[in-house]
Amino acid sequence: MQAKSDIVVLADEDAARSGGTEISRQIALLKAGALQNAILTSANFSIIATDEKGIIQLFNVGAERMLGYSAAEVVNKISPSDIHDPQEVRDRAEALTIELCTTIAPGFEALAFKASREIEDIYELTYICKDGSRFPAIVSITALRDDYGTIIGYLLIGTDNSVRKRVESELNEAMAAAEKANHAKSDFLSSMSHELRTPLNAILGFAQLMESGAPAPTPTQKRNIEQILKAGWYLLELINEVLDLALIESGKLTLSNEPVSLAEVLVECRAMIEPQARQRGIGMTFSRFDVPRFINADRTRIKQVLINLLFNAVKYNRPQGRVAVECELMPPSSIRICVRDTGIGLASEQLAQLFQPFNRLGKESGSEEGTGIGLVVTKRLVELMGGTIGASSTVGEGSMFWVEFPLTQAPRLALAEAELAAAVRPALPDGMPLRTILYVEDNPANLELVEQILARRPDLRLLSAADGRMGIEYARACLPEVILMDINLPGISGIEAMKILHADASTAHIPIIALSANAVPRDIQKGLEAGFFNYITKPIVVADFIDALDAALVSAQAAAKQR
Image 1 (cartoon, helix red, strand yellow):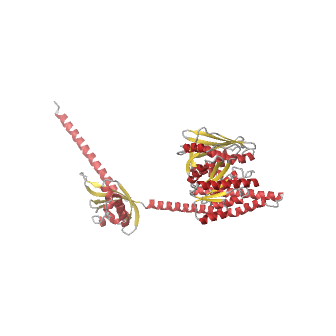
Image 2: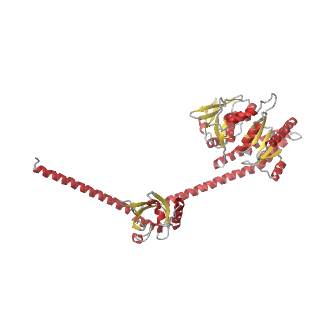
Image 3: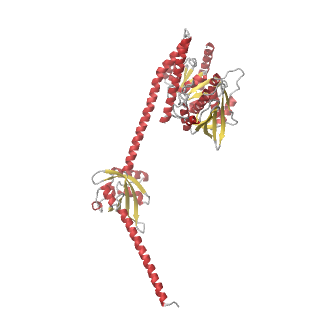
């Protein structure tokens, strides 16, 4: 049996524990009360509580400071919607009405609608102060419910959003100013390009006439004319590259990405660059593909990238050097095209300065001319098409530039079309020359149509360029038998490109056929008067197109015999 004294001790312990629990509960209540008081008296947040009808019941110190009202002026008198911008409240009601297909009144109901349906709601509205001033606020609204889930009021906690709005406004203004400046720069460069081309066209045109005129220029005059032409073509290259860079940086450059056959692109690039390599005694080797490889890229721009790398490999090579183009599969699903040369190579500090505008890496005083922009444009184009570019080099041994792109699937029906082309294209008879057709066209669908038409002709090979400037460069490099020219091209028009080619002695003899959707008789007459050999309107009538092409080929053959 337990002693009485032990029972007394236990009772004292229970009382102590009970008293301790009560003290802890009181401390917790005091802490909660202090926390609640700190929240309600915070000057940084406006805290407004309403009853279930939306009439203000609590208006804390922060709300008084922000809005200028005393609690006595608003409690039991107004709704929070009365101190919001009324137009914004109406807009919110209209937005909810459209969203829910139910009419929502433009008052406190619009502010509390989502909260009343247990949806957490945070919105931006403008508070109107007692003195009529306004400031933007971010408001969180929560429904207050009793133990049975019935709404007994709403709690609105707001904070002044003026600083963020001001920063946003300043940032938007800065971005607009930068965009405006960027557009102004692009417009200026485009305008200057046009203004520079006009006198340059006269300089190059008349210099070529003097070079080929009768009587023939004296040796001294010939050297002087060659210097004029050399400087003129260099200046034209600089204008083109600066304009290309401006278009890329301004975001105005349009790309038509599609599955592109690397084998086909490299064949076209080889045809364009090998004549220049032979003139310099540079040997070239290209890797062969066991299976077709496709990348997703703009066909014209990927050719521009590879031609620039190939031309640099030829230009900065040593006499009797070599250029090798190799393709390497990169895990997990990319392909790397490498262009290796046997030039003098680049030091590590020069490699670090690659892809900087107007930086020729110390070649400024060398015999080879350049702008220092080509690699910058190349890098931007590669990145815009989703690829990467890099380089490595060893002084005294040569350099290697590479571009890498993810592989993609062959275009739909590409294999079937290739088989069909092979089936309908007869073998080229022995002794029949393979003649080149250049098509200057920026629309991929139009280009594909002409490709399929010419696929039935074994004696024709098609090259393409996506704008007038590039078409001019391709024409000068490849000297095609016939040029097909769209009229509405990005940059310079087809008519301007045609006039430049006719003014150039090396391309003046090439028949140029206009292919255009401008089918008004006045446009056709204008094109023929401007100097086009023929004018074919789109949609193309295939028979008429083939007849016009054959007539142009006959004319080109006759012109070649007279030269």
